[in-house]
Image (cartoon, rainbow, N blue to C red; front, side, top):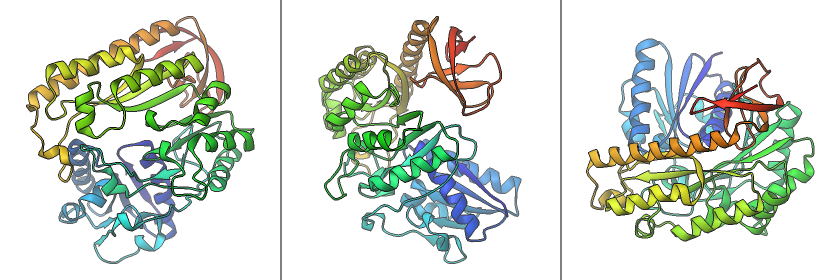
Length: 409
């Protein structure tokens, strides 16, 4: 039986693709391609549609099944594509029965989902690190975002099940596990006693001592709890890298986005964490060209890169999404949006080069992702001088860089 999965979007999608591969195979699906879509930007949706058309041209006899966030939010659009055989919603995709023949569209009301199903897998194809989904959905309503309508409200996996999945990956040979979700710093809000993310991190590290490295995916700094900061300061197996959902550097734009932090909050958080963990590296998501953004407002986002000491940027040109309040706000000219995104990426490239310069001559513990590439504890990409088995952790001296990757001896 053959089930191929094409994945768009975040680390959470990468994890869920492995679960879907298992569920589709269990249902007896054969000669099929599953496209796991992303709805974060209009461009992500466009690329998914383009891929669907290409797949059908190249493999006219294959069944094309669509799922993921864009399938949840735009089920009718995907169902209307002649290349598509089935559209499966974000909740249905975890049930093998949903993959069996039936109506072309199997998409339910995601907002009615109140609990999170454990998804136990032993390995993730093609990955040197494992992902554990600890949370799904989001209770916040940022004006640029439609992800809550694709994922539903926030719900978390009980700590016992997270620990069990982490242990299962370690037994399978994984040295590094990444905790992932839509809004992982809201972890535990729907669970008895409402445990926080920091408590979960400490429990994993305590109960799975064989785990070499634990990493967090994107976090919302305003939700970081005391235990999480304590773990960053005192648990060397918790990796010194945080990717922050910052989105902008201007307070008025942050207010119009309905973000819950200010510019000064972001800067203070980075300063505080750096005092606790001096070797930490920060990445961030930043949107360029949000509605009403002036040149001065955009300049404050550029300045935030230096003021927070960011070394890795995910830059998003603002994309109006139907159903998101920001789509109804006064828009910035598309040419200006693209130009600001380019300038922000250039600023990110400069920040990365500065980080790479500072790493030269140092020794870092590197997890090999392939025989030729790896990642430091700070998640910096490294080109390996000699072939190393994927998944192995080695101490390497950094001899230089090429502007994007460190070069190891």
